Image (cartoon, rainbow, N blue to C red; front, side, top):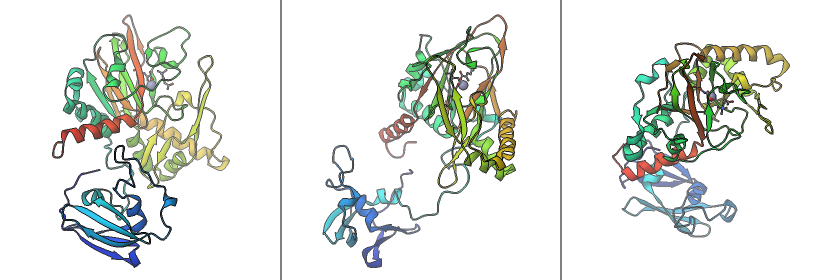
Amino acid sequence: MREVQVKPCAQLQVTHDGDLLNIHWPGRPSSRFHAVWLRDNGQDDRTRDPSNRQKLVRLQDLPPQTSIRSATLDGNGRLDLVFAPDHWHTHIDLEWLWNHRYDRSPPRGLVPDHRTTWDSGIFDRIPVLEYDDVRSDPARLLQWLETIDRFGVSVMKGLPERNAAILDAIALFGFVRETNYGKYFEVRSETNPANLAYTPRGLQPHTDNPYRDPVPGLQFLGCIENRAQGGESVVVDGFRAAEILQHESPEGFALLARYPAQFEFRGMKGVHLQSARPMIECSGHGQLAGVRFNNRSCDALTAVPFEKMAAYYTAYRRLGELVESADLQGVFKLEPGDVLVTDNTRVLHGRTAYHGEGNRWLQGAYADKDSLGSKIRILKQEAGPGAS
Ligand code: NM2
Ligand code: OGA
Ligand code: ZN
């Protein structure tokens, strides 16, 4: 949420028998607030616990006919409110109200404003950061995290050579998401591989673990050795591919967004994972919220109605072609110490096949995405207003 300086000279108007408060912000469109909303969001210590800011009152605790008896400004940018019928007093910071206003047009466009979609030129757009800088400098850490947040991909260099150092990269902001593959996993050729990732085969761009619910939010791949021939990394913005599909075929897009696809993994003893989720997920406003695409882990599609199956397959095939088109693929070769991070709810990653004498060895791990946003917010607060 963008912080905006609101001078305490806004004008207030209570209307509709106290059901609404209209705030005329100087030089800005005015916004209306409902009485129940204002009461629910009171910043007094009876509404929220003063130390942890958690809510203390339930909605049922408020009189059903809550209305605004009076609304005044105290001169310090604070709105003082008294409610009827029970004379409840509270106050709300005016700037907070501006930042949380909801009387505005809904978000437009397929891609949310805080995401930037990209194509094969991605590596000219994002910074390549050094692990030591990110570790020691909060501004660099913020830059790394904001890159992941906005673009869904980042490359960092200089991860120390020690075993499982990939976990240290995650600890810079959050927590590992442990799975049946372990806290971290070795990506190299194995005999009797539990997963096609553990072979020298090429891997079509994919999101990891679509058979898990929820999927791991962030995927980390750290390079230890990459001396084989081939084995180049590929990243594709699933949001861009979805945008193109939507443009070419709104019906095809709608099918992939509406019907769940089945995903499955049963490659390890004692593990049988299944999930059913659409390949394209949209928010209530119809904006892109997630993409999951992993051909190797698709199970039989059974949730698509008979009449729509052929059209569904056409759209699915097209999405596959799009994620393999050179125009959309960012391609590079990982070097020892490099860490590739992808937003596994949006950006697909893959690799070309490899062969030859030299070794190829990566260590990977997953992390939850909630800590990404949390750390970004904290770092911004610590940097103070004005810094960005
Ligand atoms: N590994 C590398 O999601 C997938 O099945 C891709 C994941 C095995 C953890 C590979
Ligand atoms: C994986 C994977 C890519 C690579 O392990 O899930 O996609 O470069 N690996 O080996
Ligand atoms: Zn993968």
